[in-house]
Image 1 (cartoon, rainbow, N blue to C red):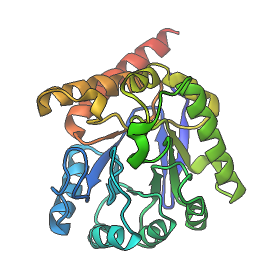
Image 2 (cartoon, rainbow, N blue to C red; image 1 turned 90 degrees about the vertical axis):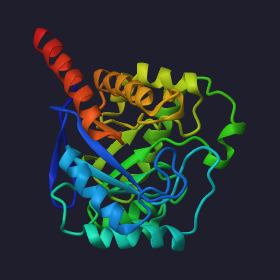
Image 3 (tube, rainbow, N blue to C red; image 1 turned 30 degrees about the vertical axis):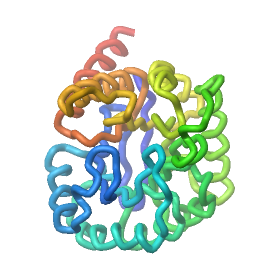
Image 4 (tube, helix red, strand yellow; image 1 turned 90 degrees about the horizontal axis):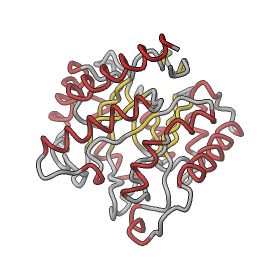
Amino acid sequence: MRKLFYWKLRQREIQLGERTVLMGVLNLTPDSFSDGGKYSDPDRAFARALELEEQGADILDVGAESTKPGSTRVSAAEEMRRLIPVLKRLKDRLTIPVSVDTYKAEIAERALDLGVEIINDPSGLTFEPQLARMVSNHNAGLVLNHMRGRPETWSKLGPMPDPMAAITRDLDAAVSRTRHVGIDRTRLVIDPGIGFGKRKEQNALILGRLGQLAALDLPIMVGPSRKSFLTHPTAEETRFATAAAVAACVLGGAHLIRVHDVIEMRAAADVADEILRATSAEA
C-alpha cells in the first residue's frame, strides 16, 4: 500500500494515499497540447472550473503558459493577463483547492494573494529559485516537477543514461532548496515530469519504476494525461491509453494524478485503488 501523507496547504490538509487524488487541468493557454485556446475566455474558463469540480476533481490546476515541447516562454505580463481574471472569478467559488502551474515568482505571489493554495512549479525551482520564498511566505503547498533542459531545447537533448537516478537526484536537490527557505516537508509533493525533456521510451520506464521515488519519502504526483508518448489516432483512443497509464501510476505508488478527463480517469484510478487495497490486505 502507498505510504500515507498529510499534505499541508494554506487553509486545509489533504490526506494522500488512502485513495488517489485527482488534479483537474484547466489550461488558459492558446497553444497547449490538446485544449489550446478552448478556455482562454475567462467566463468559459470559470464554467470549466466548476464543471471539473462537479466531475470529481479533488484539486484544480490552472495554467497560463504552455510547457509543451518547442514552446517559447511568455512574459510575466502576458501570463498575468491570461490568469488573473480567471483567479478573481474563482476566488471563494470552489470547495476544492486551486493550484497554479507556474515557475515565475511574480505570478506565484499574485496568485497566492488571490487565494491559491498550491504552486505547481514545472521547472522544479530551476528557472526561478526565488519562487520557493513566495510559497514559504504564504504557507502554500508546492509541487516540484522534474524538468530536463527547457521546452525550446528538448528536441536536441540526447537520451538520459539512467532516468530514475537522475530524476531522484535532481528532485532531492530541489527539496533541499525548499528546506533552505524554511518550507516544511509536509508542504511538498514531487513529480517525475513525464515528458519534460524525456524521450518516449524513457517515459514508459519512469512509470514502470515509479516506486523508486519512494526513497525521497514524499508524496508522488504524475501527469501522464494526453502526453505525446500516449497519443493515438483518435481522442477516444488516447483517453484509453491515458487510463492505462493512470492505472500504472497508481499501482506504482502515485498519490496524485494530474488529468484532463476527470470522469474517465476517476474510474481508472478507482479500479487501481481497489487492486492496491486488496493486495496490501493480503500482505
